Length: 90
Image 1 (cartoon, helix red, strand yellow):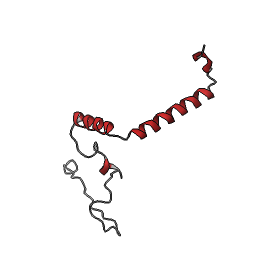
Image 2 (image 1 turned 90 degrees about the vertical axis):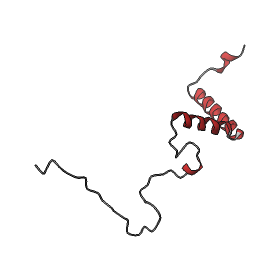
Image 3 (image 1 turned 180 degrees about the horizontal axis):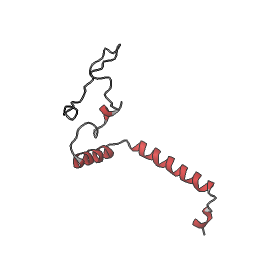
């Protein structure tokens, strides 16, 4: 019963004009080398602590900009749904 004992076929394809190092098919994000949480599989606790440390050391002006953009988008949404802002005043 030779048809039950099959081995996996392995393909060793190399592109014709590729002269670089490593595999051209390796999927990696361009910014992974700058991230502290990407690359090392340290477990959930290690990744979570790295993310918290990265958040603590982030640029404060970026956080202010994000908050301003979110506030503007919320006001635009409230304007679109015709929300009455006079309920907040006396």
